[in-house]
Image (cartoon, rainbow, N blue to C red):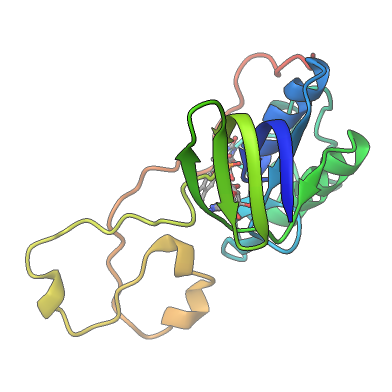
Length: 188
Ligand SMILES: Cc1cc2nc3c(=O)[nH]c(=O)nc-3n(C[C@H](O)[C@H](O)[C@H](O)COP(=O)(O)OP(=O)(O)OC[C@H]3O[C@@H](n4cnc5c(N)ncnc54)[C@H](O)[C@@H]3O)c2cc1C
């Protein structure tokens, strides 16, 4: 398939959907191409126990507050997936999936976006591809010699998988649940 549009958004996670919301408000023609078969971006692939680190009201995309999850001050990943699925339906965002973008080329007047199911030509391209799909494993000296199992958090699912083992977690960036900021984001 070949198509022409003002803007191609690569990635239909929360960043791609928020971009789509504003492109629609500007009256631009656009398409969102997402490699996953279903909505939700990275939130579909996280570990079982993951919850947002902020309450729902502080985790909203433009235009629509995230509803609270009954019984959970900090919504779980399934709630985020449901919210994102509802969001793209509600705003009728033109998300095509599964479509994997393979390359973006400058043809002079337009950008040519090659995908596994055709070519798009656009005046602009927004890359909203997230961080989940290319995890960074630092080059720690001796890592190649370590005989035990090594994994990145994108492959972690649950603690039971490590029962009886000695485990070292490298990195402690994402905080545990913490106090929310003083005021929620105001929807546009
Ligand atoms: C563990 C973890 C916890 C987090 N918790 C919070 C939180 O509590 N609150 C908060 O605000 N933020 C949180 N974040 C940060 C952020 O909200 C999430 O990372 C969020 O998923 C980022 O959205 P995104 O749209 O940028 O990327 P993603 O959700 O990763 O979406 C990117 C999309 O791009 C698609 N894609 C990638 N490459 C291609 C390609 N070549 N062609 C087509 N499609 C492609 C993918 O399939 C995917 O659907 C967290 C992040 C992590 C990693």
